[in-house]
Length: 450
Image: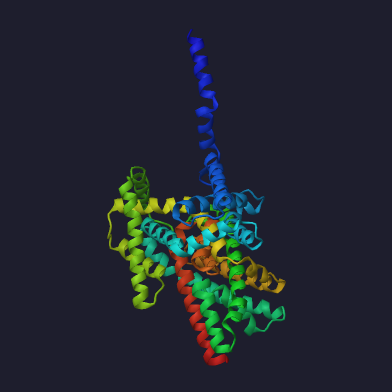
């Protein structure tokens, strides 16, 4: 009798509903989405588009849409042979959507809704502020101070060597130093589109007498291709870090002291007991600090993410929030890192990554100059950082961000490198480094070369 009862229990446990269904939920995932929910999400999007002919841009629908396509593209990249382990997931999540839009494969309602949602909500800024604040709150004070002071060494040396190598290679390929520097090398290190390509195009239009549209058309493809090269370099650095663990801090720039390690272990344990209100306070802290950055931008002209970064550093150094709220910020960081990155990259690819511009830049000469520039920039950052006692792989990842497409490029590069903790330093490299490059170069162009 007992054997019969045991057999029935085993059969019940092996039945598809609900145990088989639960197994599908737990064991098979696309990104972070359980496979059954992923399929249901795709069917719902398809039904909405076919039945109504449009897709609402409201946040609930966009969460499902961006998650579905973002994790799908990321999963494709992860499963590619060889390059799947070298940053292909971030590349695919950004550039596959861009290509699908250009060739008319992605349904128009999806494109229109995603573009409207991205531009209306500025969701990227929420993502960046949560990542930056969580990263800073997770750093020990020693690493924070020394990291910000030391990172400028590899940055400056990398830019100087990168510029010299880029101009030299361009000259060997038959380009003039003027053309190579101002239309190939400088756009790579200009800090992205909004802070780099557009100010450059305005400056060129004013100084060189060009149409701004023409100048932007020449600069923008180079920015895109430079960012793509940076993503690939980030993926390669990640593989180097895994092959040679002594060269990387896995998201740290400097070795931490024993006391700092003990504090980080305690913080990790406290995260397990975190409640919903603490998580909410971590989100609110990030949003408040970003508002501080916005007000600072209006008063001083400093980009809001950089102002927010300085505010977060100040709060951390003066112990302005409790350990519990710090833990909340760290959990918020991990949530956005694991669950929001690929949806954000999908939205970026659809809304602000024109595929035709990227294709325009694919000439042999451009590719050689850009690759040589970025590789020399990153390699110099690697060896200079090693001399300064920093983890060379992690410092070189920051050097990759110097060639990225602003905030979106930082997200893609750090995702490929699996070192999102470096976002605060990446923002310094991209925003401040790019602004200095553009300002100084335009000043020299206007006063000495024209």
